[in-house]
Length: 53
Image 1 (cartoon, one colour):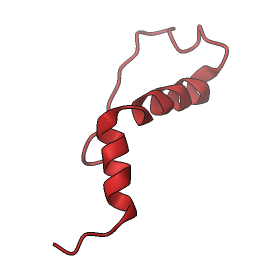
Image 2: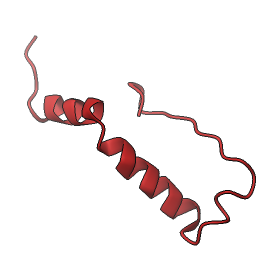
Image 3: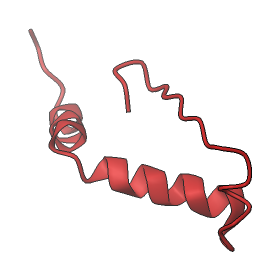
Image 4: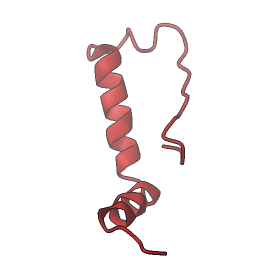
């Protein structure tokens, strides 16, 4: 994910429909994959404890 929380991703027509999970399954899988990246894990860790400065 980006710093703003938004991310654009474009699929070729028919690629989502080709998977039985549909749109929800595809987005969930994509978010799960992004959540494993070190940058996101660092963001989550930093967010757990507020910073004073």
